[in-house]
Length: 256
Ligand SMILES: C[S@@+](CC[C@H](N)C(=O)[O-])C[C@H]1O[C@@H](n2cnc3c(N)ncnc32)[C@H](O)[C@@H]1O
Image (cartoon, rainbow, N blue to C red; front, side, top):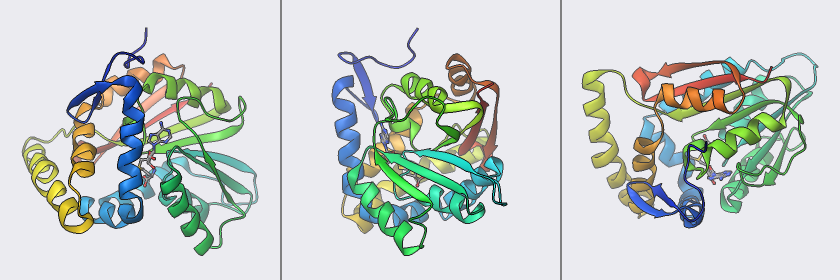
């Protein structure tokens, strides 16, 4: 049974209901608008916490530091923030493919990778997480950071993640989640709905994309539900770890 809306049915775009077939276009417009300021806004909106969470993701991935070959697929990789951290933390034969649906985000990512002198280790492909343009079992690991909640058919994206991983390969997802600490959840609500859209307006001249970003967090399945979706897609030894009281979580699964 499908867990997410099918084309022709309603899907949530933040707190709005839209036709599922229109949703990706709306998401793409958000990222086309925010691409150039994405990294700066991430720092301002999370107070720099996203950097610690991403470092945690790479620590869990634990890519080889020696000369062993390793192929990572970083889906919804955007400005390459995660991909660059991976490349810096791994050995010379650890390569990455960054796949993202937004040409604007990819353009910013390519610039950063070039400036870091890592073009030889990180390649880019424009593509949709729901229908990845890669062969079966092509990768050792799959990461997706703050990307899966933007995907309309999450179940399709998870099936694709499973398909492109080799047997023994690992799936890791970093995503905003459900806060588990009573007072923190109220502070977090205030920050999300009062502070972030105003920051978006002040810094980027737009509040609408930032409203979508915070609203879409609230529509995403909670920790347990998302873990169940991973199992439904075929992953085993599924686990998750809350970060900052559940503001974000890292889900892990293996293709065995
Ligand atoms: C919040 S950004 C995250 C970027 C990066 N992973 C990071 O953590 O900094 C979300 C990214 O998801 C991408 N995206 C949205 N829908 C997608 C889809 N269906 N397939 C692939 N990428 C998608 C957007 O273009 C955007 O670059």
